[in-house]
Image (cartoon, rainbow, N blue to C red):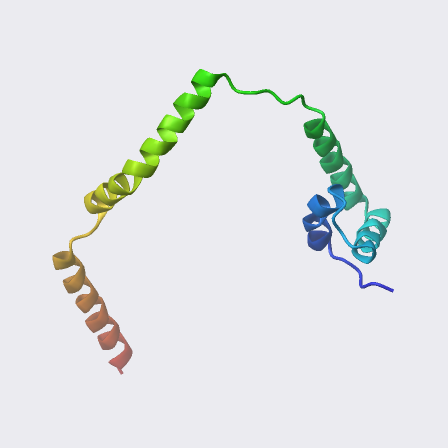
Amino acid sequence: MPAQLSHRETKALFIALADEELPAEKAQAVRSHLDGCGECAQGWQRYSATVLRVRNVEKQKAPPALASLVMTRVKRQRRFGLKRLHQMHAHYRLPVEILIPLLIAAAVGAFLIMSAP
């Protein structure tokens, strides 16, 4: 007899169950838990209904102008993204000249507190 699954384990397996990717024994363990747990069964009903609705949505192709615009922005982000990240880091970082004395003061304070009788 397979081990009982917890609520968390059962809910984590919803994706694989919906895609029919679970081994038979694991799928049976999930279904057994769903038969005995109203909360998880209700969650499975909502989840499977959502998956079914998403699978039935008609796929649309983006207009060529939109696809081109998105790809241009992606390429620009790849090219300049790291530079912008470095500029933001340089703007918000704490200068080392301030950080070192603060760390030393904290260490000395901690030492004094710990060594006090």
